Amino acid sequence: MTLRHILSLNPSKIRAIAHRRMALAALHADSSLSTRLNRYNDHMNKARALETLGGVQ
Image 1 (cartoon, rainbow, N blue to C red):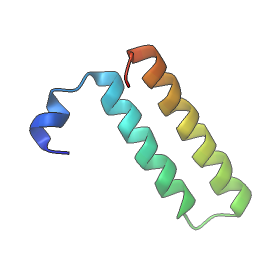
Image 2 (image 1 turned 120 degrees about the vertical axis):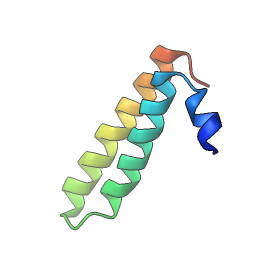
Image 3 (image 1 turned 60 degrees about the horizontal axis):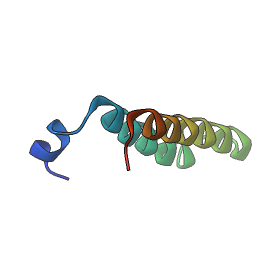
């Protein structure tokens, strides 16, 4: 994804992308499995909610 493409996206899409990246980072963190899974699920739920609210596909 290019910078120009990112700047043309709506704020909900940008935040959804950020939460998806944080979710993946949570899986690789130096924490217990349950903590990593909880953080991953939390970020993915936020990303899905933002996509629904923002009409993102």
